[in-house]
Image 1 (cartoon, rainbow, N blue to C red):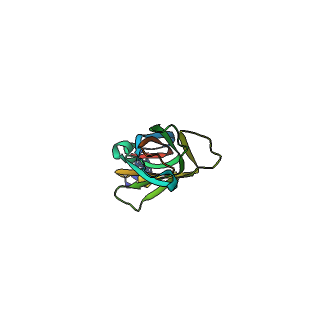
Image 2 (tube, rainbow, N blue to C red; image 1 turned 60 degrees about the vertical axis):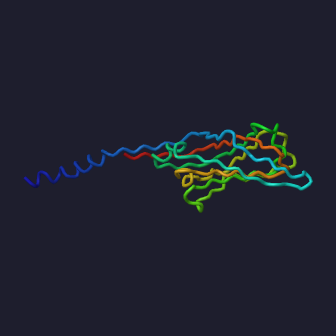
Image 3 (cartoon, rainbow, N blue to C red; image 1 turned 180 degrees about the vertical axis):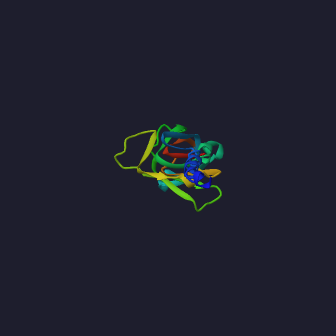
Length: 177
């Protein structure tokens, strides 16, 4: 009787292994936008030269829950900063620097955009920074809170102004059950 069961054991093992479910999908480009980021005005005379200010905002786990529940790999393909209030355009901005940090691990900081305005840049209310190679932000994006710091430099206005910051994300999601 034992000899008849032995050929069935590999079949049962194969069937038991087939019970797990795994799905993998590439994310199409997804835009995540933080509206109304306030950039503080700088009451410094224009002759003083370029000045720099930093504003920050937080994406909480409620914004990124889809990435936490799955084995995700998330990358930034483009960052767009758009003037939305207090200024007609961003011609006075000479540089933009954007970083992402986990609120619990300051060492897990990822630089996602570094922009220097060229002298030939046309007048615009939008600054778009595209990455030649997507930047992996998986570690900071899946934190409970992700802090995004926006540093701008130039001949900044005296009054506060607002921008929308949009991240164009892409990646891969794997779900194992």
